[in-house]
Image (cartoon, rainbow, N blue to C red; front, side, top):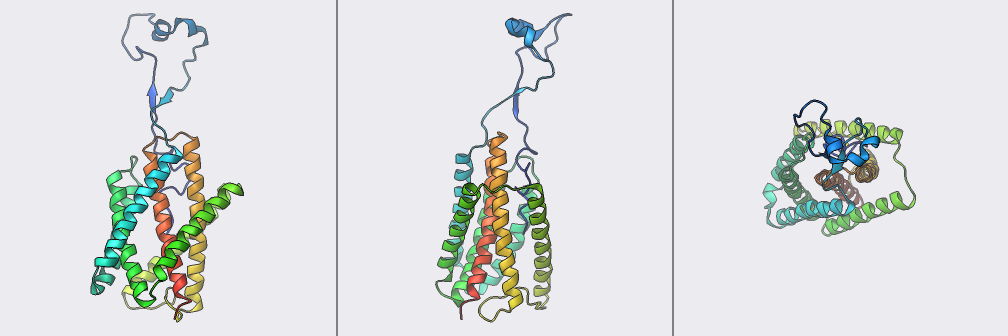
Length: 280
């Protein structure tokens, strides 16, 4: 699915209201001819520009903050995933998959639209997605033992290689690049959503599958999904870099962590599915 959290270049700045400072006495009612700036800074009166923007103060978004918050959200996903993988009875795997998938999707859109991202909402999403990942992984590992460990390693290696390519090859995310990837991702998400509803009604379109018996259509869809997930990860890195350069408020680090977690979860599920195509 498309990343609604940090999928645009102004993802962090469009919700931001930087803290501002004004000369002491600003806004106070005084007598005629009173100049608060001259009273506080008489030596700078000649250079005073009444249209100058206020100075932004307070903590700002940094790379260290983004990494720390992302570690927390991914750690929460991993914790609940392991718990679900170990403790969830086999007869509850399918209900847990459907229930956590729906709740997670609704949570994304409820939390994403908030001007100030609620930390509790981010961690709730991470917990729900952890249950989803745990149930999803349990299903695949039951059929193909050991596939989950391979998928986890492949996911983080893919993310690491993507980040390295973004930095060392100086990849630039242009407006056209962002538009094409976003449209393609939304289109794929729409197709998969329709396929999910049809699957609940007992209709098999052949778009999704698992194991060596999956058709070429399912393999092609998963391959496209992995490519789009990687490209979305590139856009995530670019948006984070823009947010740091724009000195977005420190609170926006949670938005970055939220968005990256969404993309990583999507990447993992698609890699797990592709690996199953080569298992009997």
